[in-house]
Length: 149
Image 1 (cartoon, rainbow, N blue to C red):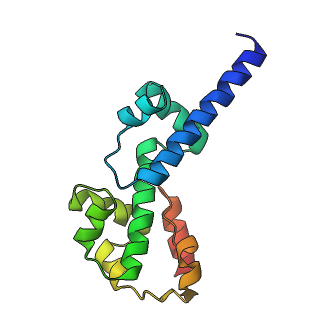
Image 2: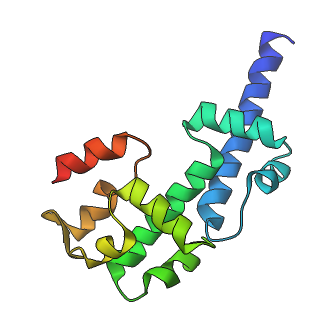
């Protein structure tokens, strides 16, 4: 393969990965799995997973769960739905898995987050809360949370 054709293939793959990410952003509440995402992008599930992680730094599943938790945070701040209703509204089928992932990413349970003052997050106005409280994967979450407290 020549340099020009490999560059063209990389750009083509990037466009497909962007479409997969956009689909996750749009359809996060729908049942999605790597196989169906890969089929829609005309890639194998393994190739999609490897390339998605290489380009975006996390697996398609992790990206999907982050979007779901991010939306759940917004619904919890609104305060008019129960944790169980929010779990299903964001596309999770297990309350236990939802609560575990939420706690991993946010640093507190969904119930504790819901009880937290909805108008401010540690003195931050609600208009900035979404940006400041955006879920962060892995150990980065611990450092971010400690800076906010």
